[in-house]
Image (cartoon, rainbow, N blue to C red):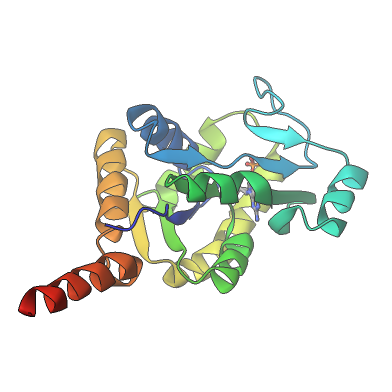
Length: 209
Ligand code: 5GP
C-alpha cells in the first residue's frame, strides 16, 4: 500500500476531552502518529511547558511567522493567535507518519481547502449538559472565559457537519480504539493508494503475455 502519512485534523468543543484522547492515542501508537505542536500567543496554563503543549510566542514573533510563510494555517480564538508550523508537518508526513493537528474549526476548514485529502474528526461529549459540566469542572478558567467558550461552542456546533467523522467521547478506551480504526481504515481508501493500484494493474498486464 502507499506509504505517505495522512493529515488528520481533530477538533472538538473546548472541554470535549480531545486533549486526553490525543495523549492516549499517541502513547499507544507512538510509531504511527505524530502530533503537531502549535504556536500560540496565549499564556501558558499551570503545568504547560514551552515546546510540549505549545510554542508560546509573543504577538510580534507570531506575526513574523505569518509573514515568513512558516505556518500552514492560523486563527484567532478568544483573543489569541494559534497556528500550525509547516516544517514539522511536512517532514513527518513524508516519513509515513499520520500527523494530527488539534485545531479549531476555522483552521480545520482552511487546512481542508489547502489539502483536500485531510481527514476531519470532531470530538464531542454525549450531550450539551455534559459539556457544561466538564468546562466548569476543569476549574482552570475564569467565569468570563467559560462563558466565552460556551458561546464559541455554539458557533462550533454549526460547523460539525463539515467533518468526516464524529467521535463521541463517553469512554476513553473505546474512543481511542475507535479513532485508531477510523484512521487506519482511511489508509485503505482507493484514492489514497494510486501507486499501489497502478503497480498491480501493470503487473497484471505483464502477466497476460
Ligand atoms: P487552548 O487555549 O484551550 O489550548 O486552545 C484553544 C483552541 O485553539 C482549541 O480549540 C485548540 O484546538 C485550538 N488550536 C490549538 N492550536 C491551534 C492551531 O495551530 N491552529 C488553530 N487554528 N487552532 C488551534
